[in-house]
Length: 343
Image 1 (cartoon, one colour):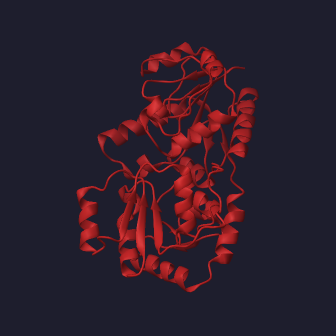
Image 2 (tube, one colour):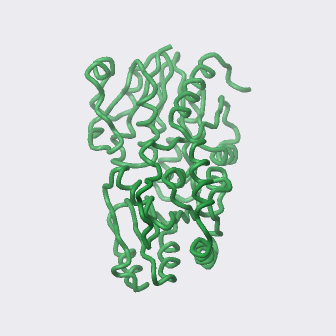
């Protein structure tokens, strides 16, 4: 059975967790057809394929559903909620989270939800990146009939402890600063401790509200913002940080938490299902609904020896491997191809 990968995600975002997931699968799973679209070269996670790989792939020039009709049979796995309509095609969907269902009520959010529902309704198999995401799926799509499998994300080999690194007097906040990520909560907690600073990685330039927040907290000169850092530089930053702050109120998985643990960086994160599932006993958890809880967690981090937390985090991170993700994904492909849809 031919395997077709639809790499539309590279054209929808320049950087992001889904791009990282898809790029790591692409490195490890050989496919007969890969559908790529204009703009994919600008995606940070995208790697140029060899000439032989490109020659065996079908490069399409437009983004519209009808192009998926060219896939008439085989197994079709889209990177972002698209389907192939051929009668002999088995569609596979990876469900990363249900952020839109939980937080987005605008028109764009409703459109995304409809697209996701359509993909799930037409899928023979659905992959969840965590048991927490599977639980959310059961809540929002109780009537779905398909084979399912929890397959955890991995962590890049770019993240590891650097023996020569020295700890600085700063903590790290990584990624998007959308409302549910609780950046303001992190900034206010750091502001409470006058002798530490905040390193913010990615998430785009600060908007007016964020700049005003930093000013109101009197943190000018105590916030460094890094954009476009390669993994090697993020790894060094994590090695030198006191800890990673990850105060999100919702996650499907939480890749930065595993990356930090792999780098030997202690983690403080919200006590939410996905992060508890991923971090286990290797992080300090706090209640994101209580601002004082994060201040207490930071205080605990500063008061206690971090060596045991670092050791547990490194061991925990070894449970997550992109090789394992790819191996289990291929096995799921075979299960879908050979199985029957639950009634």
